[in-house]
Image (tube, rainbow, N blue to C red; front, side):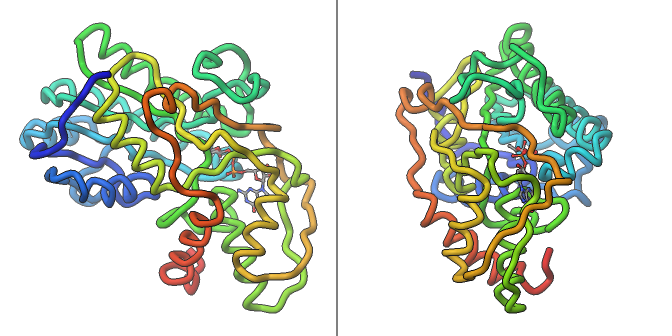
Length: 316
Ligand code: GFB
């Protein structure tokens, strides 16, 4: 097993304001490294020359590339240009600039939506590019596949130690709690909390409630990213998840129980279901020695606690 020391290193978390990046920055506080961040005002990742100039002057040893334009099924399918263009440009700029600046190690966060719509479940890393993508998120998936390929290409041609991880669906602090554009877990926390506050008896779910998804706590993803950065080097990317899934209706019922709302769910079947099932085969990462420490109930209670303390009033 390869080993990369973080102690004493200068580590840039690109995307430190998002759900994954903020969790990585918090997790790195335990690593005795120097955490470097830049706000969007300080550095626009869409501008190649700015990214190169910024990295050239900073002696960064390691990069966590968590910056991306993200969102749930509706945002993905209604803003295809942004999801494709922003993500292609951000990852190209950061990966190329990291090579130019002599960054020693880079970890790129891709997404489980890169796998074909009808991939065999649980999805193994080998399923990449074996079939057509899920139409609701193919733009985002194409960009993330390109990011994985960039890491592999820079490793082959320039010897860069750049690796990729494939997180499954996430939930946790600093997600976008937005009923229209958010991921399903955040959107349901928002909608069910609002129903409880307003004493409403029903909450509408999109689609049929039957699709199956796997949910990983963002703090566990961060722990996995630090583990991979320290312990893994290779061209093959690694799935990160729990290996367990549930239906969207089961997710909604679990969140309702945690929030303490006793109503019923209705279904808006004009909204898409998306991929019928998405659950990761996590045996590669498990064999390296990492598995998700937080059970769903504990993680979701923490996500809800964060939502109530930080985002519930503004509804954003
Ligand atoms: O997280 P999500 O929006 O995207 O979940 P994906 C979508 C699933 O939840 C669909 C159902 O089956 C929806 O019909 N759903 C039910 C809802 N109610 C709601 C709701 O109120 N909001 C939302 N958003 N969904 C994601 C990609 O695909 O996969 C992400 O959008 C990322 O970009 C992630 O790649 C891994 O799971 O379908």
